[in-house]
Length: 156
Image (tube, one colour):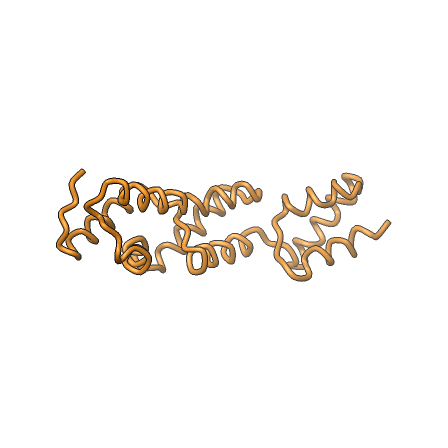
């Protein structure tokens, strides 16, 4: 069996991982609990594993590449085992830096030719942004801007 240190370095060579992800991988391989604890401490002490750094990188990519909202990012980070306090701080910092109208900008780019007067189309667009983790208030605000932007009357 490969040593736990070699396996840990193999796992983090190309991709950051959370503490939970590494623990799960170690357990799958059958390493004992004491070795796992020692290796986690080693990785933390030498900076090879850092959940805060992981959350920051994940959040940055989720906002800028995947165009996700706060709720989706929070859900994914919780699933990966990141501490709630780290998640809240990271999301607060990240969304402070990005523009307020992230939904509106995406809506303009992606749905500029959509018919916002059609209830089915509005529902489809609304659900699209909900799946990406934006709040209903953010989505409704962006839709209202799109309607006034296009001089289309949006009725609820």
